[in-house]
Amino acid sequence: MTDRRGLLIILSSPSGAGKSTLSKRLLEWDPSLRFSVSATTRAPRPGEVDGKDYHFMAEEQFKHDVIEGQMLEHAHVFGNFYGSPMAPVQAAIEAGRDVLFDIDWQGAQQISNSVLRDFVLSVFVLPPSIAELRRRLESRGQDSAEVIAKRMQKSWDEISHWDGYDYVLVNDDLDQSFEKLRTIVTAERLRRAQQPGLLDHVRNLQKEFEEISA
Image (tube, rainbow, N blue to C red):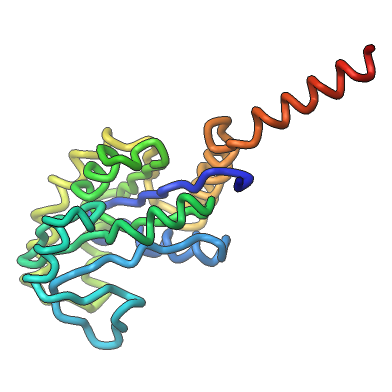
């Protein structure tokens, strides 16, 4: 039996609000965290490695895995499919390891309604303003003006789902936001439900008390 149950830590935000940077910092803070590598049907970007950044899949195979129930969550975004393979997540949870998800609200909702919902810790990251959100997207230099426009159009739809999460952070200062996120994760790990060995420990304390009181 492990000391505690694993958590499914979900970070969501509109593109540019900071969830990927916060995810990276969280992984650096605790190397025991397992990052859930998503599967996608989109083509790799320069520098991306299959199995590390994404599991790059043909659309036919992706759809097959969805039908077979091998995806914990999946979504169709900007013309491509994205999803989280089920098997490695289940294995990590059973071993008491936390799994980190950097996904959108659709994926978060599916996981929160899945058979693993009792292990979910969800956090939504809001930008300080829409103007700052656009500035961050443009400063990345990764997307064309057309793609940035599409992401901005989609941002309000994503933001509108903020109230479906356990916690919400306004990322106006990255360092402060990370400290808050670290506090949230630490506290959630200590919840009574996350510590399956507590009952046996209390029973042993009771037995010890009865023995010394006899």
